[in-house]
Length: 173
Image (cartoon, rainbow, N blue to C red; front, side, top):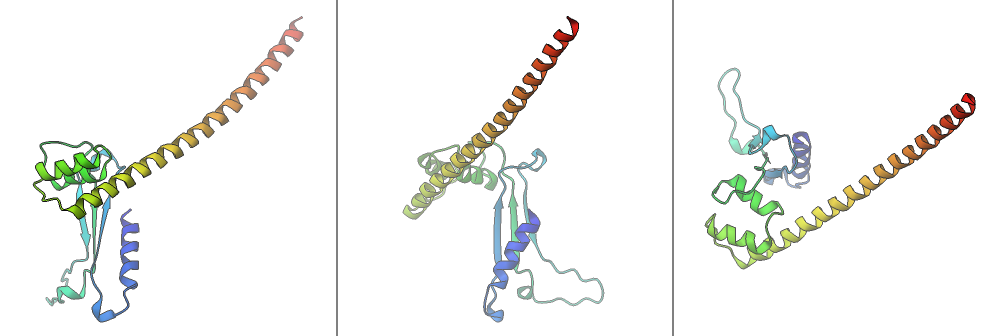
């Protein structure tokens, strides 16, 4: 995923028209499916200068044009945790309704929620629900195909077994 993130950031930098006015690109990747050992990890990747010979430093504004953040949120929401990771869980996982999310933002994280934020959380909740439903549909369709294939194999095996049994019976008689 990190290579993909670098690729996308590079494309965003290249698309900028004026070389002298190139702006930094920040890309945040919220990873929903990951190995357990990555739970709670939040990493930042960027270009850094390392002087290997004579000391000379380039101006910071001339490099490090991309910043990539890879976030692997903790598995479950924690009502006592005020970390950034837990905030990401509240916003991006589909465990709470939009109203519950807004209440958590206000009370647990002390965020002053504006009307615009309310609208965005509502929209984001609908998007999360949409993708969750689409994922379930795709999984169900795939499961049905697998079951159908297995069922056909079972029928073929039963038919073959039936023929063998019949032949064996005739052979024994």
